[in-house]
Length: 130
Image (cartoon, rainbow, N blue to C red; front, side):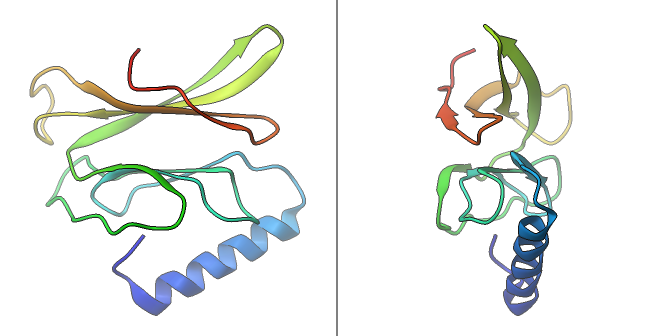
């Protein structure tokens, strides 16, 4: 995420170092400071999926392209995360919804993107249809 310069770079470096040292699998990181909706496949070490769900209020921000970015929109909205179990497998399914304004109910939310990550870190674009 852009906009915070050296502090952000140091923070990300430290977070990746600690994730690597933990020695346990991490499938998903949720963040929300940036006023947008994004799906990012970060570089290793780190989780296979990062979700930015900061489109809940305030002024929307322009989005800078970052390495691993799979989806982005500068619109109001929110994220929904589901644990889905099918045929002996589990996936975290992340659905990003856009809304017409930061104030609910401001019309029906619209599905903008849906991605999932398995226990082994395999990512899948689930499309934007429910």
